[in-house]
Length: 401
Image (cartoon, helix red, strand yellow):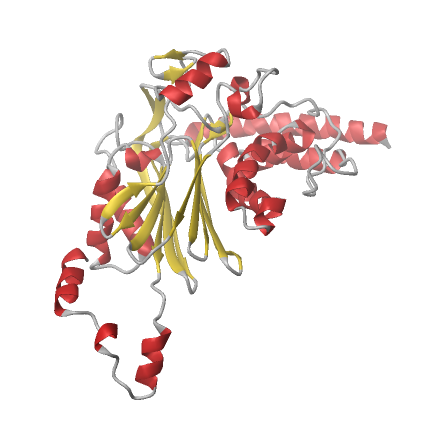
């Protein structure tokens, strides 16, 4: 049976090489790419946008993504307003060196949050922190390679599906994780993980609690009565805490980049920066270990933005909050506001700020209904003076919106 499988694999591998040659020839018809600086840019930007809106009884959201001037789209996102009956999950993932790690996170990270024991006990911070680190573990070995291949380009996807037919999973648990992620035998069993990577910035809502986890330079910002507050920190190599870890793990910083290559200090993937066998995952040159911020939401909180650095390169947190508040006066569709942000940020020509992929999620909080006042009005009673806003409060409200 094994010999038959190997023979099948050899034949199909030959077919894969032939198809690869066909794909190479076909690629000549693609738009011209221009190398500028550290990135590869198109001769004209791709401004088509992928957008969606949704809501539940607690919030409403809109998201959009646009490739822009980049030769490839390497961003991904996740939006699950009903992760469970009381929890919502949103995430942006900005890939570098390829799209597969960002897509892997968009597919699996929220699942790992839910599967961790801490999630059921209400410890969302621990659950999401462990889920970030779990991504690196899951992308190793034959199973990890195959999943990444399936999420990759057409030829990688073909190879991944073929190996999925040939190599079977091992039974039992893997690394003591009871999450149904079975390891597999195969030619890539010693795969250490991908050399490309992705940022991850996620927001989890449960009742009035908001938990933000971040690794990389994507950002989460909340608007409180028009004031922008950063709920995440951009993990750049020049930050003292990042620089200290990088140097202690045997890395260096050159031209503002880790080992002269990567311009951020934390990411999922990037296995080449995680090879120090004497240090835990959170102390590697590049780590997937996220910062966690937990806040209690209140009536002053208006909306939250998750976005990749393609936005923050062009607008400050306060500038974006100001722009969104202005747009909310005339447009109630949140995805349209995201699209307008992209159009505002898009550079007129290739090179520099405004040329990156752009992804943004906008979450607006719904205000709770005052059941006491509603009950009084349904009974034909007028609300008491304490239930009614004063003239001064009304004026202040209209000035701030």
